Amino acid sequence: MNPNISSLIPVLLTLSACNLVSDFQRPDVATPAQWHNANLAAQKSVVDPHWWQAFGSAKLNRLMPQALAYNNDLAAARQRILQARAQAKIAGANLWPSLGLQGNVTDNHTDSGANRQEAGQFTVAYVVDLWGANRAGRDAGAARLLGEVFARDALQLVVMANVGQAYFNLLALDERKRIATEFLANVDKVLAIIEARYRAGAVSALDVAQQKTEQATARANLHLLGQQVILAGNVLALLLGQPPQQMVVNAERFSDMRLPSPNALQPASLLERRPDVRQLEMQLIAANADIGVARAAFYPTLQLNLDALLASPQPAGAALSLAAGLTQPLFQGGRLEGGLENAQARNAELVETYRKTVLTAFKEVEDAAAIRNHSGRRLQALADAVDKARQAYRLSEERYHVGLINYQTLLDTQRSLLNAQNSEVQARLDVLAAMVQLYQALGGGWPVNTLGVNG
Image 1 (cartoon, one colour):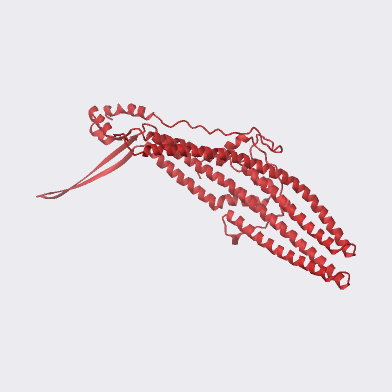
Image 2 (image 1 turned 45 degrees about the horizontal axis):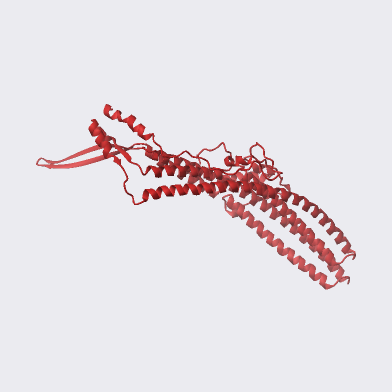
């Protein structure tokens, strides 16, 4: 290399050392020292990434990996990662020289005939990163790429939670359908007793009509539950990325689901555990870099054409080439000021969004823990209520058969048993759903130490 050209390299490197991007600072958010819910003790253990296995459901253990592999929303998120990777590659390209080939074909016509001359010339151009704008663009692209990875991880948490809740809802509906079938059998049995007593003249036709009404209502409710079971299966099929026509559930018994107790981490750990929080942090890093790019736009830019430098290697020629590649914005009609103000306002918006996301994360943990605790107590009380209601119905059926109580008392105990059983199913569903939400709120199912961008 020409010594005059090589002597310029240290100067250019010195110029490139300037950087108008301020250091990123994570926004301050009021973080509680411990959880408000007394039964949610803070520990240092890690939330199990395979949290769904704690429910003891072999079917759910098969459904969850299927959803993670074939869910359409997750597949779309993986494509967004590929797009962000391509954009990051484009953003980093400005740090490198651009190499081109310029061809030239000339036809010369003389008395002796036509003569074609072909020539080619390599062109090398490089934009000197005087103020760190190119580096800031590269860093912003890398941060947005990581942001899409975290967005995929956050969506993965949502999909897993939706699969768990959809499956438990399907089990609950199937259990209610079983209860409704049992209730209809009891109604038919009581109707047979009433019709026998009516034929014996012990009761009026009104009792028969009322019980037939109860029978028709029970049949209608059974058909409704059958419809809801099908619709719940269709929801689950969509989450699994398969047509509803191919969905075969073979659901387990609702009462066989275990009720685990997930470990809670310290509140401050959610800043690292929650991928949606990390996604906002990456967006803030990118926005901070964008401010540096907007600031750099106010300052001169220097584009080097190395072929021109090589053509005029002497100091005077090199200086002239440098001067020719130097541009300084003078008047842009407010475009540069507007760009900087927009970048700063965007950053300020993301700061507030970040703070709200963190506060929402705290709220979601507290909400899920409160629902789990109170629904758990309600489930215990309703389990006792079902036992007592079943005992009361059995006694009332026996006494009505021998004429010791009237029909209305039997009807009341019959309905009380049905209501208690359905309430118990709903309470168990609330507990299971709250546990799924608690795992999701704590960032379960997302390994923090796996932050690769392979999609």
